[in-house]
Length: 149
Image 1 (cartoon, rainbow, N blue to C red):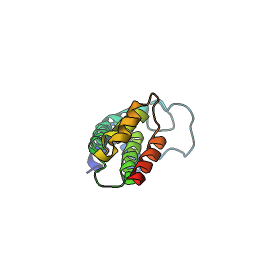
Image 2 (cartoon, rainbow, N blue to C red):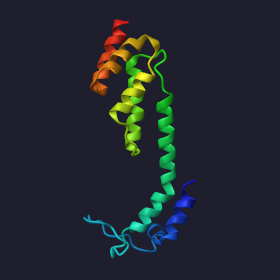
Image 3 (cartoon, rainbow, N blue to C red):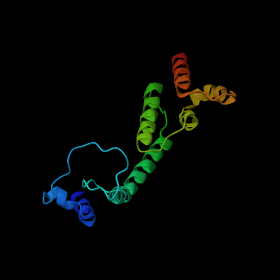
Image 4 (cartoon, helix red, strand yellow):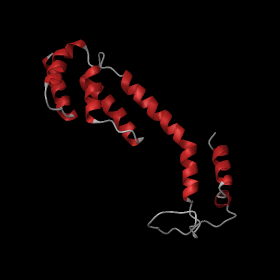
């Protein structure tokens, strides 16, 4: 599925000859600085990288929307606090990798909003604080509360 559009993209930017071997590949040296279309060594030009970005950026946006939707819908339900927090942290890390950072405040609000009714007192106490709680502090407090229950 990916080969045809990728091949067309490489043809469109006169790069396919590097893949089929009709043009020798560039030497394997490390270049510092910015790669430009005037690069005499035959490295992929900035325009080519921009074209690749445009071709695949929509897929990245779709992934980000999908991850944010999963994060928004996630609730603790009957699972242990550790599994719930690990799932949230995993999605948050995936979002960061995709370039969509989740702030500590967003993470805390998400965690608290997905807890069950047995955590309402803890939720209220954390909301009443003047300072923002960290993820690690919240993790410990929720584990303690779960043990108490």
